[in-house]
Length: 321
Image (cartoon, rainbow, N blue to C red; front, side):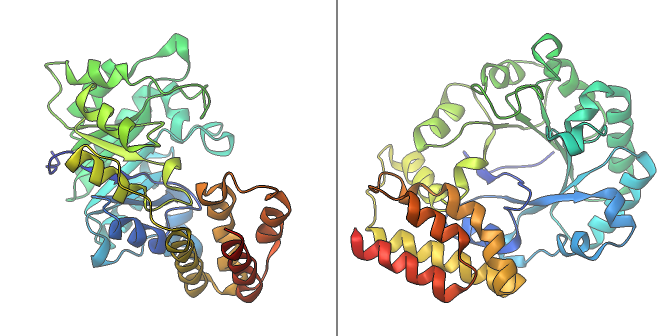
C-alpha cells in the first residue's frame, strides 16, 4: 500500500504532455508525485527507441510512476520488468485511456469490457515486480455499466498499492462533469484499504479542496488543468495550506515559465521537435485568455518553427499587456 503525506496533489499521466521536463516543472511548483506519458508494452518489448525514451526518470522528480498499457498478459509482464529496471517508484497500469486507438483495440479503458483479463494482467504484474503497482481506470464503460465499486475490491485483491479513478465512464471521454460521488462511495466501502486517488475536472484550488473535504479522496490527480499551467500546483498548495487564493503574479512571470518550458522541450527534442511538442501547452494556456483580438497572434504562435520567432511573438504580447 502506498503511503501519502496529508492531501497530496499528483500530476496525471498524459500522452505528449508529461515528458520529463514538464514533470520536473510541475514538481518545482509543488506536485507531490508525477507520472510519465503512456508506455506501450508492445512497443517496449520490441525495443522501440521513442518508447524506451519515456522510461527515463530523474531523481529530482521522485516519487515518479511509469504508466504502462497493453492487453497481452505476457507482453505486459515482460514490459513491467523492463520498466522496473528504469527504477521508478511505482508502476501504474493504464486501464482508463478512452481514445479509440487504444481502448478500441482492447487496451486502456477497453479492458473495462474484459474484467477477467484486466485482473489477470494486474495479478501477473504484481507478482513479477518488486515495486508498488497501482491502477488508473474509469467508472465503467458507459452509464449502464458503472462497475467501479466491485472492480476496486477485485483490483485490491490482486495486490495493487493504490487505485486512481477518473470519475467518468469511457463513453463520456472527457465530456460532461466528472462524478466524484463515486470516490465518496469507495471511501465508505469498509472492504477497501488501499488509497483512493480521484481524478477529473480538478482545474481550480477550490475543486481540489472539495475533492479532499467533501469526497474524502486520499490524493487528488490533476490532468488537463495543468497543461499550459504548471503553476496550478503552487496555487493549489497555497489554498490547501491557507484557505486563501494565491495572489496572481504579473504577466511576465507566467510568460517566463512558458518560455522555460519551450527551452526545456527544445533541449530534449531539438528546436523543431521541441516547438511542435510544446504547441499543445501554448494552445490551451489560460495566460492568453481574455486578450482582445488575440486569435491571429495565437495562430502565429502555433505556426512558429524557431525559438527566435516564437519568443519574438510572445515578447510582443507582453508589450501589449
